[in-house]
Image (cartoon, rainbow, N blue to C red; front, side, top):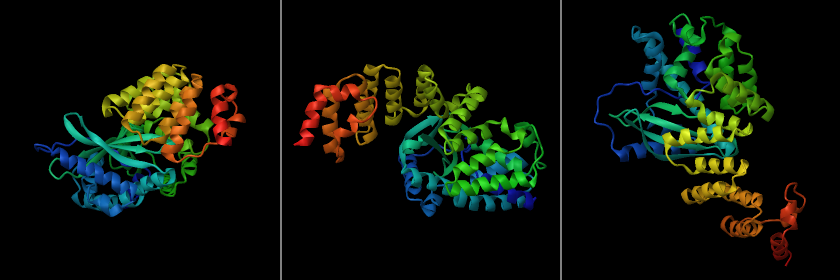
Length: 391
């Protein structure tokens, strides 16, 4: 079994850990301050690519045992120990390393947002603001006795890791359990497929997501109809081309669009298809779980603006600014709402305020050559604004 477990570790390296809350620890629960402290430490560790700090709050052994028992049962203590050791090394050097790479490349930021309650248990909510590449929320599920993180839930995959990670282990050891057959409808896995998953893990750690897409796309046919693979194809396709990303989103919506866990991932699809009501429903579904959030509120503003509901859009973006006034992107959205509403005096006044607030240097001539701004350039507000820059 040890040879099989080596394949399991490299396959798990392809994925960020997200996990189920199926544990039965009897405890009065953690104090709110402890949950906050764990969430803040986790976010700090991600932002600083600090593996040692991460190890102080993550119980990788607990997660490893959960995955092992789900696939193999509790019979083989020796093999379980071997699996836990390999898992412990892999989760930090490959899985979390992929998170570090993603945050560094996008200039993203991990933030502890709040404590939420799911299924009667408190979880630390983390927001990953990946700037132009999107948004994700993570729920950290804590051991109520130690306060350490034993499970994760990721909103962009909508997947529980006790399901997703166990599925991946089953790929590597199909003879050890009937799990693979139940999930993928197959028991076959050749060495080339196992190596492909290892390469995906290596690519992700190096930020080579476009190459990972080609590997996932070429996996055997029996894996292609599963949600895990469909979600991966969406995630990686955006690094190939926008057209391909839309194509994969369309496939995900067609095959799994009724699953509420995919609401955040499918938001882009509904928005690009101009299905604005569904896009709003997707945001509100996430919001019903995480609570009010400035970025989600700004998404509402963007949807309403695109649907030509500028008054509602302005209400939402003003609320987003109230919630997080330091987010510069919110003011650009507000400026575009003013532009589409032809409130040009408000638009130039906002530009002047932004120049002072964020130390920006505006160039009015940019708008003179920019398609779509013809009415703005012809307005009295623009003429006055341009004049102050020529003095």
